[in-house]
View 1 (cartoon, rainbow, N blue to C red):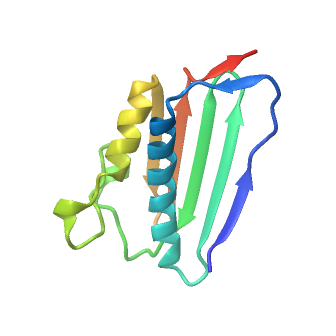
View 2: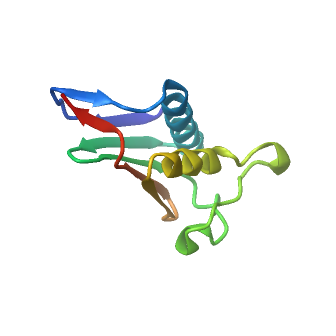
View 3: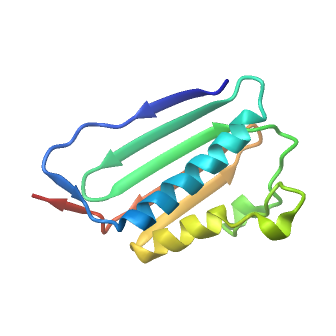
Amino acid sequence: GIEVIIDFPEKDNIEWNMREADTIALLSNIFDNSIEGAAKCENGHIRVRLEWDNMVKLTVSNSKPCSLLYEGVMRSGKMIRTSKHDFREHGFGLSVINEIVDRYAGDMEFVDLGKEFYLCVELSALLLKL
């Protein structure tokens, strides 16, 4: 199994200002990628942290096998290649995430740390205080 640790603070009087389709695409791609990596580990884990004040900051890290190295991508800030054999049909997850982040004037950082994959998404145009 995969251990999942979630840290979502409670906030009052906040309205999420993102199209539903974008929210679903963003979260499903983030979680699909993290589940896939963690599932390949004997003691897989996923950590999710959501912070908000003037912006939304979503940080997700997951375990992954060291043998799954995503070619030189993270250090240069470029998109990474998929680990799947039929690469022409896969590898769009981070591109979709990046497109949505750009649409909402945000930033994305991702790093392959060997046994851990780290993704941080910051979105500044999402919260309306009521």
